[in-house]
Image (cartoon, rainbow, N blue to C red):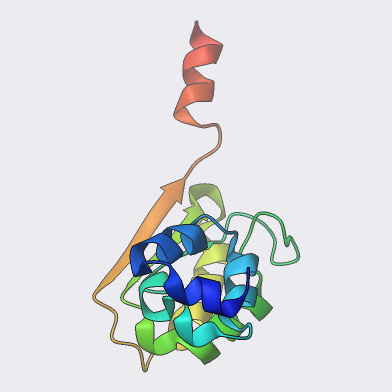
Length: 130
């Protein structure tokens, strides 16, 4: 699809397409040729950092290099930020969250959330007792 074709799509359709991409794909696409047609401000309005995995895990966690790239290009759009952290690893992930927060000083964030996760999950506990 050429950049002219993208320009003919309604804004909400482009936004839905972008939201179905992985975070890495979103970052790559928003920096691509013809990016002025992409819904950059809407796409980066909500952001969830997954701090449940080691920073070296590109598959599950939000890698620090990607976080820095997103802040560099899209910090002015961030409004709702959430952190997903393991309850049993609070200190380790609290440090990572603080590092991220320190990069958000110039953002106009409206909401900041914490999504605690625990092992075993509630589903695992109910299966063990059954």
